[in-house]
Length: 326
Ligand code: DAH
Image 1 (cartoon, rainbow, N blue to C red):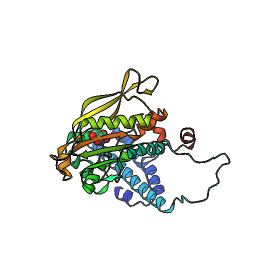
Image 2 (cartoon, rainbow, N blue to C red):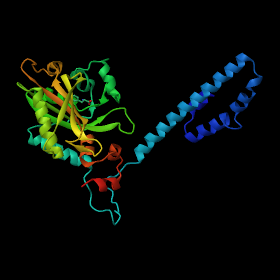
Image 3 (cartoon, rainbow, N blue to C red):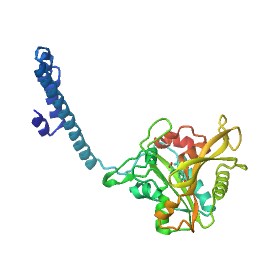
Image 4 (tube, protein in one colour):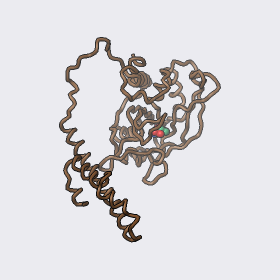
């Protein structure tokens, strides 16, 4: 019967055979009902047979569903330019809060002398991990549960890959920010499999950690409109920076207000770019040094616009965008 299952060409036929076999009056159902009359060996053989059949049905169903889906994708082409009758109250379009946040952040970084670079979302192991001093089997890879795609590539887990591409192409000194979508196998109330980051990178001959703090203060004060930006710096660990830090900003957790209050909010991870990373892009770590940091773009937008649920960003609900966009 397994051979027969494999030869079936449509889901309907498969369902029919399944119900003839495992349905209420199915042949296998009847035999399984009789199992109690069988001797031990025969019973085990029947169980094995039933389980092999179930597997065969499952595999055949998966295969046929895939074929049906591929056929549907071939015929159901989306025409994004097709005319559409907007309801009378549709109104003008709005910018998505993430678009606004990126445009504000980008303008500030450019004002501070950072150039914008964008890298690909499908990355290779070298740019996403190895060149960032995360060799194969390094436990730090576990912190970023990765979507792998065909050909050994992956969906970039962070925009830090952008610093490698930029330094490979342009060399050092360099002062850039790389915004974009990033992907991790993560899904719960506060995590989404896709989110956005902005990587910052400044390499020169006399750059220190205090330059990182100074730039972040300037940037946070401009973005959030704060006169005073009290920051706290804690040691941390990232394979691509040494030393690594977490930078917290003072905030009033209850009121959701930044720059005041008695709580601290972890806001930017960063550090001094590891000499191994500089060597990997053929920059001389005895001549050059600098800092890198990673900002969560979605988080920046949530904090600025007071949006508590980041999942709403990606639901595409026009009513939500109208209420929260400009
Ligand atoms: N790439 C890190 C992440 O996604 C964030 C990060 C940490 C970026 C430290 C940096 C850095 O440039 O120096 O978790």
